[in-house]
Amino acid sequence: MTKKIVIGISLCNDKCRSKALQIVVSIPGVQSAEIVRGGRERVVVVGDVDSVELTRKLRKKMGHAELMSVTDTATATATTQPTAPPQPPATAPPYYGTPHYYNLYEVREPACDTTPCSIL
Image (cartoon, rainbow, N blue to C red; front, side, top):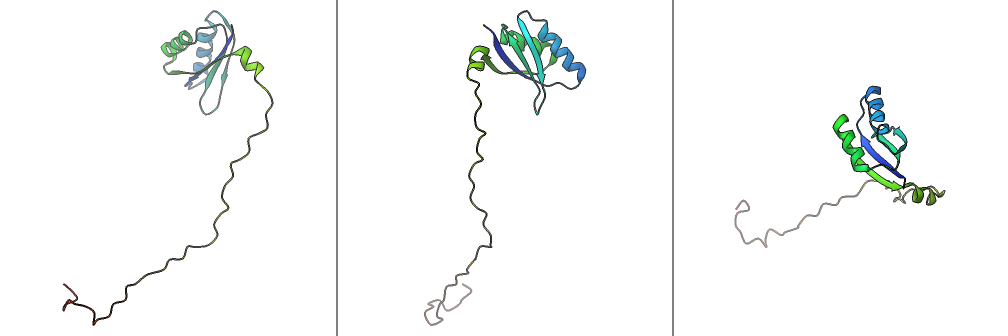
């Protein structure tokens, strides 16, 4: 049963990339391997391979490796269908203008005051 394994890994230069691919390809059962670049570089492996063993070997030789996903290729190809692009979320219209602030004052009559001194 072939699986698609995605492992997140930090690769600093071309030497690290080739070293990671050599480690992945040296494991028996690997049908294909590729490195996907982006914000976080990932190694995508297709084949009948133990994902934990593959991640352990990459951690041992490369430093940091994180197992991101494991999927069966049979179900992954069967469920892949073209879908409509997602609609952007609806947002409220922008508010044009400034809020109005009102100051409220208490009106007191000096005759109603029971305290003789206003400071105390």
